[in-house]
Image (cartoon, rainbow over all chains, first blue to last red; front, side, top):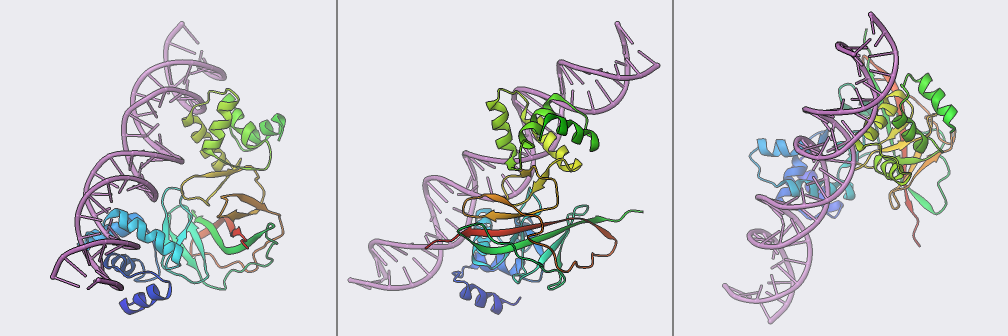
Length: 135
Length: 135
DNA sequence: GGCGGCGTTAGACTTTGTCTAATCATCATT
DNA sequence: AATGATGATTAGACAAAGTCTAACGCCGCC
């Protein structure tokens, strides 16, 4: 994702532009990928950036709320952020910890259940857990 | 779930019986429910049990591995254990934090995607996020 | 009875993420 | 240009969940 596209996305989602947010976005949204806060901080440090830990966490929370990145719940100990915003699901390899996008349309819900009384849908998360075949 | 059924389940899943494991199981498997480690410890304390925190965590990890309970990944800060072992999915109310089982068969995957090379399936987690309707 | 192996325990420790209080940036108004 | 308000950023303290360690207990087996 180019700098231009990021600016546009911020604007569209009502996120005020700051240098720090742009730095975080540049790393996370560079390409389709799954990164933890820690990995993002490491990469920022690698590029000599001095964005603080607190800001990275604030920013990722904001990105999650505003739909700029998706928080994926797979690993109970660390939050993973997905740069791909569109409707899609995941493979999670429990051996390697790797997370992989499932091509759109390769999996689809057959029947949708009725929601509990007085609630409305927010979204659906599907994770297909896999492991390495050994032999 | 009765004490008898728990003993049977332990046996079937190759889990050695100990008084502490039985105490944890008695609470978690009592009925279909979703509990955090913390809630389980609280209930143990309420009944006067002195099972240690470490043992509760060890036991829940063991139960997860052996298929005696299911670990649900929904809240990044706390692990939730589901006493229902069968194939089923969940509603997660982000307003209340409540987790609710989706009746079996009410939702089903239409298409199953091809798995990545050299891997085999372990299972599928589906979480339908919902929120309270306000008006 | 002694030994080995596993389970349990208290409490220290680790890790991830949040909070606090101070500082800084931006912008509108005068 | 100074003022002030609002919001973002920062370092570091803090909180919470879960893991680890080292000691101890229990049980079966030789």
